[in-house]
Length: 284
Image 1 (spheres, rainbow, N blue to C red):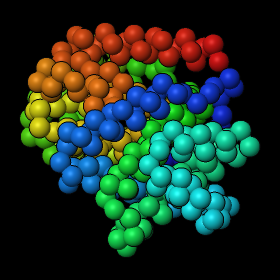
Image 2: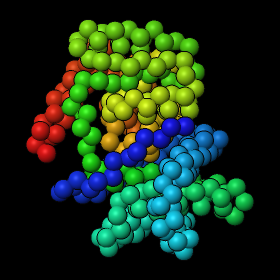
Image 3: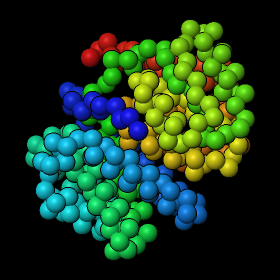
Image 4: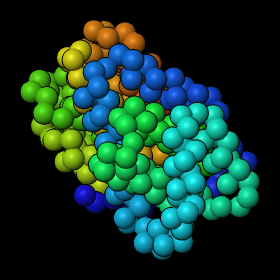
C-alpha cells in the first residue's frame, strides 16, 4: 500500500492533547466491553499492522532506535496503565526525542514488538488489546503536534461507502449535493478495506466522509477510522448516513470527529469546519 509521507514538523505552541487522549482511551475501553473478542482482535491487528507498515517505510528512524529502547516502552505498556505510558512518552518529548522518531520509531516499534510477542504466544490477547489501545490513545493525543496541511482550508473531500457495502445510493447523492455547493468530491464506493485506505491516502485530502446505512458495521467503521488516523493524524473524519440515526452513540464509539444523518446537516457541519480551519491556517 502506498503510504504518504507524514508531516511531522512540530507546530509552534502546540501541546499534547490530554482531552483527546482520555476520550480515545474511554472509547477504546467501551469497544472492548461491547464488541466480541474477535472484533477487538481485528482492531488490535489493525493498529499493529499499520504502525509496522509506517515503521517499515522509515528506515533511518527504525535504525536510530535500539531494541532496548523499544522494549522499555513495551514493558511500560504491558503494565496496562495508559496514564503511565502517556507520561513515559511525554518525558521522551521533554527530553528532546524528535516527533518523527517518537511516532514512527518508538511507538510504531513497540506496536511491532507487541505483534511479535502476540504471534509467539508470549503475551495474551488481553495484554495486546490494552497495550495497542493505549498506543492509539497516545497517538491521538500527539495529533496537535503535527504540522497542519496547507490543504486544510480547501473545500475538497473524499466521500466513501464502508468496505464491501452494497447500498451506495446515499453517499452518491451526498457527493452530488456537495458538488453543487462548490465542493470537489472524490467518491469511493465498493472498495475493500485496504483499497479504500490506499485510495483515501493517495488523494491527499484531509476531509474524509464515511457513509453507511446499516447499524451492524461498527467494527468495519472503527477499523477504517483507526487506519486513517494512524496514517494521517491531521485528517478530519465525518460519519454519515442512516447509521447515525440507527446508532445514536456512533460518534462516541467510532472515533470520528462529527456525525450527520442528513445531507444538509453534513454540508453545514463541514462548511463550518472548513471556515474554522481557514481561520486557523490564516492565523498561522
